[in-house]
Structures are given as structure tokens and as C-alpha cells.
Length: 201
Image: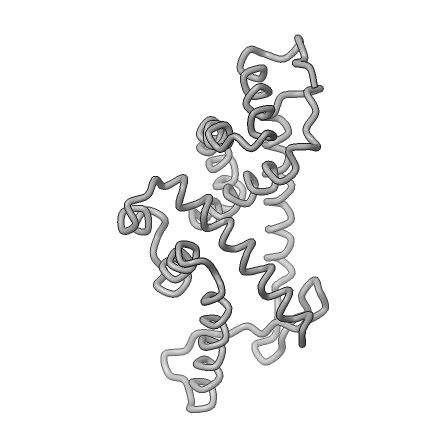
């Protein structure tokens, strides 16, 4: 692909970085993320009005963009393409949230046709509820144990201990961007493990 001369200087630099990233250059990925993560995050924060959701959606947007870099063409700026991916992904997220209107006693059907149950947190659980909660925790830990150690640690800190991204970065002595990128990869691996396990059942 040749650089489009109509692109701005900034967009031309992005285009060169995309070219390097497509060849597997990790520094190019990091540079692209560094250039746009703040503006993507604040745009998404306005849309969802929740910092954690905006954080997760920012990681997802970059994940989807990097996964589909081969689809990017220099007819328009990389930033335009990236913001479109982030916006569409966020709109899908908002739609999914709106669909989650449900009865306390009933589950709802997920996109793959399986039923998902939702728990209403209560200060006191009866013995049966405690047992079910314990079983779910055991199953989730079994799935997480299949991850590589570094991803397993990140998932445990984020989802079992409910630590913030900043706290995880401090504890593991990693840059914040690395923590977010690796958590995105960990979630992808978890999804693949769950998908494989479901197919075996």
C-alpha cells in the first residue's frame, strides 16, 4: 500500500506505523496505542459515563483494530478508522446493556443461545445459594487456571480481587498500557477456553 498524499502529516506517520505493525513490530502497536488511547478513552467515557467500562471498551477497540489491520486502507486516516471501530463497539455494548432487562427469577438468552443467570447481591445468602455461588467460583477458577501464569495473575487481580488497573500496574510493576493490553489478551484466551469447553459438553 502506498501512502495517500492527501493525508495529513500525522495521518501519514500513522500509516507508516500501521505498516510496521502489520509486519509484527510490537513498538509500532505500542506507539499507535499511545497516540490515541487518551482521546479514545475520553470519547467512550462520554458515551458510557463509567470509567471501568470506558477502560475496557478502549482496550477492546484497540484489540479489534489491531486484529483487523489488514482491512485498513489509506483512503482515510487511521484515526478515523479507529474511532469508527471504537464508536461501533461502544454502541453494541450500550445495546447489549439495554437488553439486560430481566426478571429476578429468570435468566436471559445470550447471543449464542445459552441461558445466562444474573445474581442480585444480597447481604445474606441461604445455604443453597452459597453452594451455587461456591460451585460457580470453583468452575471459574478451573478455567482461569488454564491460562499462562502472567495472564492468570492479571485475571485474578482484576476479576477475583476487583483491583483497579492502576493498582494492578503498581503491584506487578508494569506500565498501565501493558496491563490493559495483556488483560485484553487474557479475556480473549478465556473466551477461547470457554468456547472449547462448551463444544466438548
